Amino acid sequence: MEYNGTGADIDMIREAERADRNQLYELYRMLVPNSKKMNVLEEQIDTIKNDPNNFLFVFDFDGEILGTVTLNICLQALHGTRPYGIVENIIVHENHRSKRIGKQLLQYVEEYCKSIHCHRIMLLSNSTRERAHQFFEREGYDGFVSKGFKRYI
Image 1 (cartoon, rainbow, N blue to C red):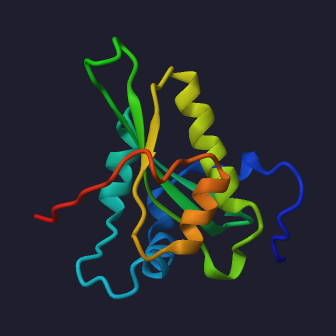
Image 2 (cartoon, helix red, strand yellow; image 1 turned 180 degrees about the vertical axis):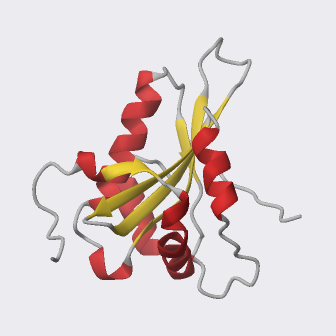
């Protein structure tokens, strides 16, 4: 059965399980096709699932993982007890884009962050992913308020 993107599908979002490893690998390969360092481990999926501040969510349609997002909750001292969220590795299967899957994943993350009184949600996106930037801006993320920096170690 083909997912057509209709209806309220938030119940299709769940935390990843070790059995999702191969499908997650395929999604990540779409995100970073030339990565030589990619290594999706079942044990790491378990570690994330058991950590109260880290989440690996998947959009599951009849056993097929069509999208995923990682959410990390970070503590800080600047805003009292209010943490902030970092969104990483959001990807929708290339055959299922423009079907509201990414939108639903971000909404799910945002609702969770609101429920724990996060101060803000941040994300980085590769500077060449212009279609993704348009999507993030449509979803209310401002790409001009900050400049992101990375240093790989």
